[in-house]
Length: 379
Ligand SMILES: *Cc1c(COP(=O)(O)O)cnc(C)c1O
Image 1 (tube, rainbow, N blue to C red):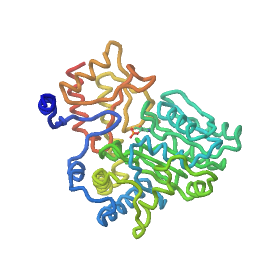
Image 2: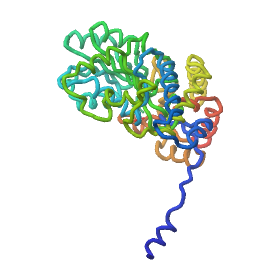
Image 3: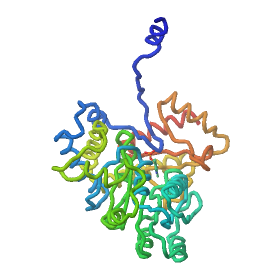
Image 4: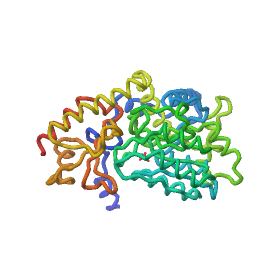
């Protein structure tokens, strides 16, 4: 009895404070998206929800620039988009080349291995892009390779890998391609069909600027064909596209697969509507322009970028901490005194780099000015 009274005093509603999120994701969310999220929950088979899901598919096809029928949301974060790609495409013993030049490429390698692949790694230094000639050489050494996977925007380093060139090499060598577009979608140019990407996955909370927890994904006909020809079923029941597609597929035959997080669907729908209103090209150039503005401001205070301009990501800026800058203490001050979150370095970059995300709704001049003003005070 007394215990219950104590508990009632201890727990009160959670109140999230306003923060400016300028890390590697989630990014600050537009009020329109938060408003969409807080609408009444509908059943996951409600005809209105099904109509909305069809619009999500249509808008994702525009965002990915693809005609792929199998384009939908995995009900889980970007990491599960990665799992979903590999568990569906890889059969035990398949030879898979993973190009890796950072934390997420390394993760992809592990995911491919756990899906049963025999993995050949093609590596490049952190901070440098993958050389398509290195991929070519690996594929010539391993002519039985079935799949090539890599990360288009390596969020751990801020490096842009050349998706078009890497996919061209993979396809010329008879491979399917799996491309991580988690930090790419909506922020920089990306063309699934033109660039010969067979499977691409992303997330809701970076370039799309929505709430975390969903993973847009798209499968080409060639990818679906490999899945159809599997001799053993996909090891994950939940992620098996044969199981989930009846939920996302045709309008008439919609069938229960899992209880979809419909409020999060509303939020992604709204962020996609906003992206469509802005236009893909305009969104890409906004990210580039704001990056240039930010780079100019950083130069003014003598901060350097980790990555050379030619393959630098505009939406994820890795800046090198100067001698004497106390990483953790400075980030703490930015957060607690100025309400601004910037990202710490990841893996080998920890303590040496900051990762400053200017993505989605967060990519604008006001945010940069606010950050520069705060930096001016803490440095
Ligand atoms: C963020 C990120 C992921 C993981 O996405 P989550 O939504 O955090 O699960 C995967 N790959 C890359 C390149 C990322 O930046």
